[in-house]
Image (cartoon, rainbow, N blue to C red):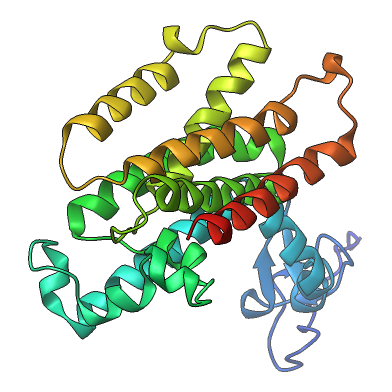
Length: 282
């Protein structure tokens, strides 16, 4: 008697390559596929069509990327400052050391009273992205990075950007009030404004800022401001005042009952006041 035999092995062709034997199947749709037509997935392997279908859309990928960049404004402002510094260095390499006087490119961006009096209002902004030497920009960018990591995630990108611009314009106004005849440049006015805003925010929450790193850095920088020559005293003080005024609203704790709209309007109002003061005193 002949015993029944098991069925012989069957081969299944790859769904994309009929002449190739499929070693496995897509764990999502079950299509047979050769190794070339399978993509490793989190669980199992997917065929090329399933892998493509499971890929997020361009808008979704952009949304995910955007969500991961929690300090995007900080990085953008740093990039602009660095790009301006590199551009000026390419035009005149003597600007790298900051010891050879003001270059033509620096003069075109810097702040001084006569220029504002003649209507060159853009200098109120461009001067905040101008630096004199590698040490100058490195120090400011380090502080900007640290303060950005602290403030931007807490208040959001839009309000952080508004706060930064308010502090920048406040620094320009302070420079024109106290030293209208001198040439000014640097992000330090805006950075001082961020420090002032952070200190005010801590105070409103019952934290003594001078018991924290923010207070220590602020005191050290104020000491440097009044002891080293060639520093824009007005720019630093103006930045602190503007940043503190805007920060008192933007960084107010929720239990203070400050309406959300006010946290956007306050830095804009500080900007308007700073610009008005700049033109009034120039």
